[in-house]
Image (cartoon, rainbow, N blue to C red; front, side):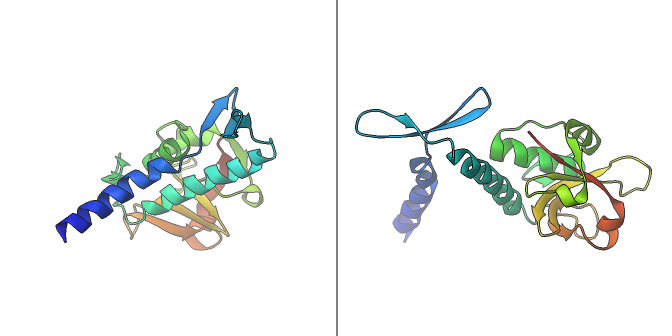
Length: 178
């Protein structure tokens, strides 16, 4: 039994390494190489849209994997997150983007988007203290839902709806990270 568990652990640990496609970023353009019999060739640029969607999928997948992680003021890792620490962690580890550490600084780092312009992966910003400045953020998932580290009743990473109640009243704008 011990041997089976060790074998499964090794298989799961190394399986992610095997299937990674060779990808490089040159001048902010993603190039994916496809092996041929002669030499590697750059894949058609129509693949660019697919790669963007793949980045968003990685972003949302990593965010969702943190569900239930406890809220921790100043936290920015899997031991606990505050809202902006959660957003920083997900963007850095899923797509390699370094963001400012606070929700207020993050809100100034992006170009503002209205509610109807939001797309999955965008950051959403709130004034939950009703003091006239941004003090909360999360990652928009689509269909009116966003994922965030809540200091409210849940006190953990959770999914909330942007279109009703508390968050609808306190939503200020969204932003897209380039």
